Image 1 (cartoon, helix red, strand yellow):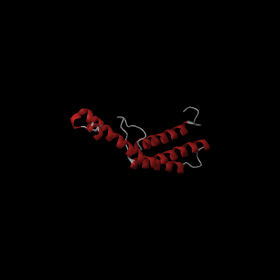
Image 2: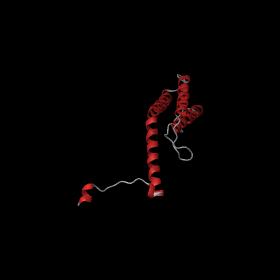
Image 3: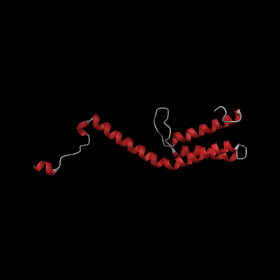
Image 4: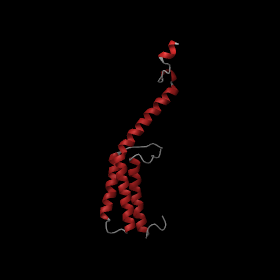
Length: 125
């Protein structure tokens, strides 16, 4: 980050912003947790976004144009991802259910799903 910020205090401020950003991204299912799992906790994500919006309001007029644009971009992107999170969650749950069905079919093939590929026309001939 050297050269991005005008001083150490500004760099530390954006480290704080980054902490809230990563937390929100984690709870929006955009980053895996320490065990590699994706989580969706929209309440926690909203709390992180709300804190960033509060910081954005409290620092208005005290940041350079570049810093304000960075913070605004971070907040806007998180808000956009918040709107997309329910669909992303449904997709992840569907993928997990499909993976579990496949895993079960390989673990216990006699009880797995069966697809009959024969047709009545083939059996009549």
